[in-house]
Length: 180
Image (cartoon, rainbow, N blue to C red; front, side):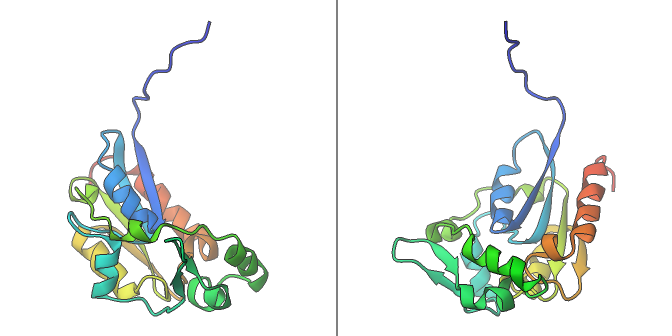
């Protein structure tokens, strides 16, 4: 006989990168979510979308292109320079040809309630990010009151090029007991 599944009594932390930051901003409202960690990510406010944010402070890249069927992809010719400049070329080549392409429409969906308004948050600003403007990252983390680290000369994929620093911040967030 199989035991019925019981909900866990423990909390969890959500970590989001890039447009995944918008996902955790909304999904982080769940009761079991204790806090949020943004890694070179969008951190929209209530009523705001990632598209709204990029209009305020556009990224340096021009490599994000729409597909005829409504998705977005990063031009492989510019992927290394504009997405992962601090990652070895062989690894970047694989990343460019295996990229997940999000629905363009998802970037225009506004957040209904920003979880960071009621839950603690941490963030990584990638100072050489060309996919999300680093000044936009700073604006969002400041507005949210996120405990923030900046990783100098990091591209958009800080979790790949600077894994120790990113992991340390995630561990710090996970140890958070609700006290500042």
